[in-house]
Each structure stands twice: as structure tokens, then as C-alpha cells.
Amino acid sequence: MTSTVEHSASVPAQADDLIFDIRNITLRFGGVTSLNDVSLRMRRGQVLAIIGPNGAGKTSLFNSLTGVYSPQEGTIEVRARLGDSATSVIGQKTHVVNRLGVARTFQNIRLFPALTALENVKVGVETRQKSGPISAMLGLPRQRREDRESTERAFELLRRVGLQAKANDIAGSLAYGEQRRLEIARALGTDPGVILLDEPAAGTNPAEKRELATLIKGINTTDGVSVLLIEHDMKLVMSIADRIIVLNFGQKIAEGTPEQIQRNPEVIAAYLGSSADEVGDAVQAQPELHRIDTAVSLDELTGQQGPAAGSATSTGATSTGATSTEEWKA
Ligand SMILES: Nc1ncnc2c1ncn2[C@@H]1O[C@H](COP(=O)(O)OP(=O)(O)OP(=O)(O)O)[C@@H](O)[C@H]1O
Ligand SMILES: [Mg+2]
Image (tube, rainbow, N blue to C red):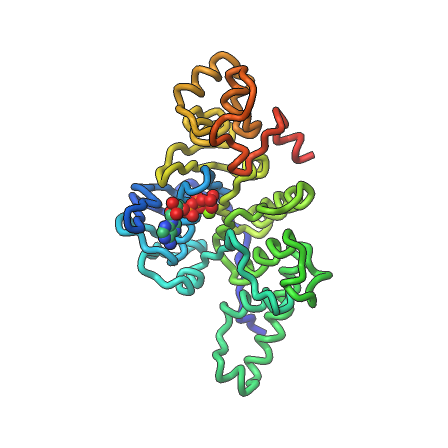
């Protein structure tokens, strides 16, 4: 029997194999410039994190990559699935971009709260099937076969995210962290080449964050899906990202490995609401404090007491001292 739902195989990363090639995009809303001449490239096989303070333009970037917003300037090309040719995203409808292999979750969870967990995931799976509403109404054989297949695939995905026991629960009744994982399962149901996760850990507790880190890493390495991740929780980001891009006021201010980003004065300054020079001076005096995952305030860096204005705690980063990523994972 030929399945009408295809699943991506695990694929090796290649240096020049780009999922997204974003060049010089600018997105404006009246007088507000949400993205200002942003260029970035995402390689296949990566977990690429986008970080930055509130209002930096992270969700605007996701919306531009998925057809929700159309930047006034620049180009975005996508090759979501291995072997695809490059397609321009700007001006495409969201469902078209999804069919190209780009799936996403939302900062504010968007499930069908009155449907069961299983039904929510089936909605994702069925976007890839061939039967239309007419054959569904008539209950034609292909439609019945596809319904059976989508149920099986949806169960498989619920198992993947650890929600198999909740298959028949109403989505709206699930705990917050479960709803976030259900959104991931639904997005995976569309068989994407890349999944965009907008703050998947928001509102979850430390145990749920650890499970989520394992899940996201597994989606990347085991399932072969590239991951673009917006997340404020620095420990989670630092533990799973291969590379990090930092936005601030709509501009890309840094790009590098987690280690490079943690020690970048401009990044620290953006989170603390101070200047890179001030951070640079403070860190020269006390290099051991210069790590973004500790999210110490500028006053702490400079040896004074009290929180700095616009300190990193308002971004959701922690202020608990020098907890290392490794400690957090343990
Ligand atoms: N539809 C819109 N209309 C007007 N302004 C918008 C719209 N979408 C985004 N913006 C503005 O663009 C800027 C960036 O917002 P965006 O939601 O992308 O930030 P963010 O980095 O995701 O922030 P957060 O961490 O708080 O989610 C903000 O000033 C926001 O008000
Ligand atoms: Mg956002």
C-alpha cells in the first residue's frame, strides 16, 4: 500500500545546504521598523536560535518566514526539504509556505481547544493528504484509508512528544506545557523540513524545560528536522543551539556559537539595557562574570548592588548567579 503521508528521513548537514537564505529584509508598520536590513542564512540540520530582548523583532521574523508578513524590502528563499529547489517566500500565502515544508508553533498557543489532542494533531497530518472535502463527505475508500493513516500518524506523533496517554483529552484541558508539546506534534504532522518554535518553553516549569530540550534536540537529530528556535530561556538556548543569532531593535547585532554569544559585549549590553562599552569595561575587570546565561545585572558586573534598569530578568533570562548550562541539564 502506498502511503499518502510521506515522512522525512534523517539527513546529514551540509555546509552549503541552506534552508533559509534571507537577504536584507526590512519590515515596517507605519512608523515602526520591526526588522531593519536583516540578513541571515540557516543551514540544513541545525538548531538555530534567535534571541533578543522583548520587541526585538523575533516573532516578526518568523511571521516573515511563514507568509504572515511581507517585508517591504529584501528577499527570502526557502528550500525546506532536502532536494527542493529554492522558492521565494515573500508574497506567498501561509498554507503554501507550510506545504513547502515550513511548520511553526506560536508564541500564544493556537490549538483547537474544543478538539481532542489526537484531533488537533490529525489537522496537521491531513494538510499533507490528497482527499478533498467531497470524498470526505462521501466516505470514499481513499478518504477512509487516509483517515486511518492520519490517525495512526497522529498517535505516533503524540507518542513522540510524550502525550500518548492524553490522546482523547480535550486540548483546552491539558496543562500548559502539554499544550506546547501538542502544538509541536501538530506542526510535525505536516512533515516539515524545518520547524519554527516561538518560545516553546514560555510558562513551563524547570522539569518541563528539560523535557523540552531533549525533545527539540531529538526532533533535530533523530527525526532530521531543522529547528529555528525563538527562546528567552538562556539555559535552554545555550544547551541545544548549534548557532545563535541576536536581534535588537529589529537589527541583527551578533551571530555565533553559544559560547561566542555568551561572551559578546554587545549582546550582554542589549539584554541589560546599557552600552557595549560599559559592559566591556566591567567584564575586563571580572571576566569570569561575563556570561549571558548568568544574566547578572550591570551593577552586579561592576560590583555595585541592586538591579540595573531594563535588566535581563525582564527578558525571562534568569538572575540566579553562575549556574552553568551543564548543571541545568543534569
Ligand atoms: N502587526 C503589527 N503591527 C504593528 N506593529 C507590529 C506588528 N507586529 C510587530 N510589530 C512591532 O514590531 C516590533 C517587534 O515585535 P515582535 O513581536 O517581532 O518582537 P519580539 O522580538 O517577538 O518580542 P517578544 O520577545 O516580546 O515576543 C514591536 O515594536 C512590535 O510592536
Ligand atoms: Mg515574540
